Length: 101
Image (cartoon, rainbow, N blue to C red; front, side):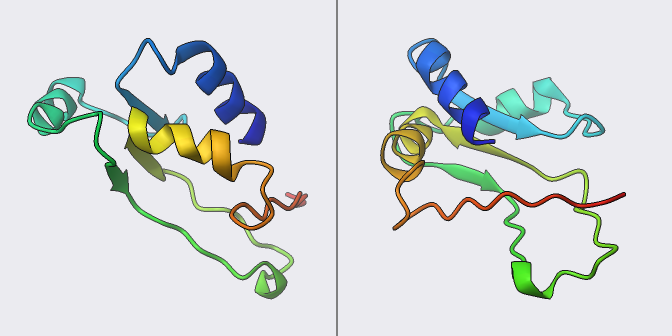
């Protein structure tokens, strides 16, 4: 996700107000999503979604990451994630995990 976030930030941060991350199996009714965000200001911090947190040391060997997770962030929330969070060990503890299927 690190490279995807950086790419999106570098190429699209000034073109869009909202940034959504979904899995390939997720269905989104765009009309409903648009109505949901009509009264939200993308220049304010806003996040909508579900957080999934796992202790990496406790994952079983046959662990499969859940599918269907998604979230949406305002441009104001997305920007500091990339500019201040990514690459900063204080805020972002990215660890490469290879899961065998």
